[in-house]
Amino acid sequence: MSKAAQKRFKKELGKMLSAGRHWEWLETLEKESVVVEFRREWQEAWQTLARRALRDSQHMEEFLMRSSALRQRPDISEIQFLFLLKEIIEKDEQGEKLASLKG
Image (cartoon, rainbow, N blue to C red; front, side, top):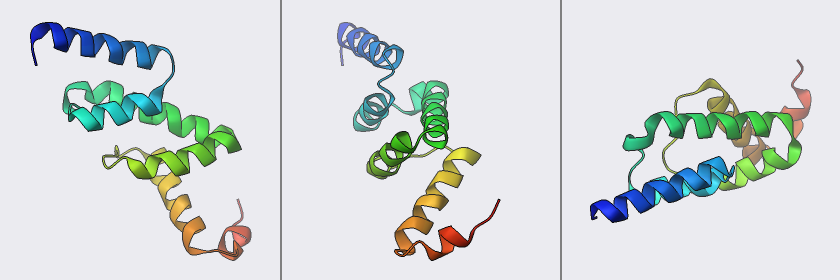
């Protein structure tokens, strides 16, 4: 990729992130295999999405659906919790285990 193309690519990524299009941004990073170059921002984007998911049921549904398309995930406690929750939901179709949880 030429310097001009790299600059344009970084500018587009910056626009996506500042516009709050975190899912598109994460998908683009994985598609272009540049997660390592943007590691700090990548973790911040995941953390932002996890916090949204924990606050709002619509964001939770979106997180559970869109996160499965992404292969790389950070080692953040909120993310681990959400994926554990997703696993419980998918395995327990009647919701018995989830309903029995307290706290």
